Length: 113
Image (tube, rainbow, N blue to C red):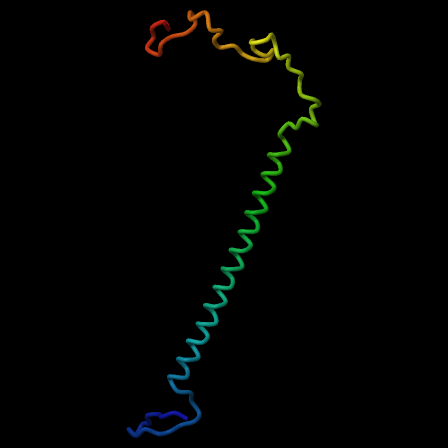
């Protein structure tokens, strides 16, 4: 039952119309339910996005790993001759043999000493 202002200026109690407070409460409850539903949708969308991103990263990593050469796929590694005693192995690139400085500089453009 609600109070209703009649045409003659008197307030009358009427049971046929909901009060403004109950109508407002119903609107708030509806908005609250809609907000909760929206939040649930956002959570589900975030979970789906995380799943898809994780799946993409896994696939990308596996494809990158599959292109790497593996020893078993290419056969045995080459045999390296250790070279003479005190000398470099056969696959070494000798930068300085300890004797000739003609190919070296001091960093300022002058020959190394």
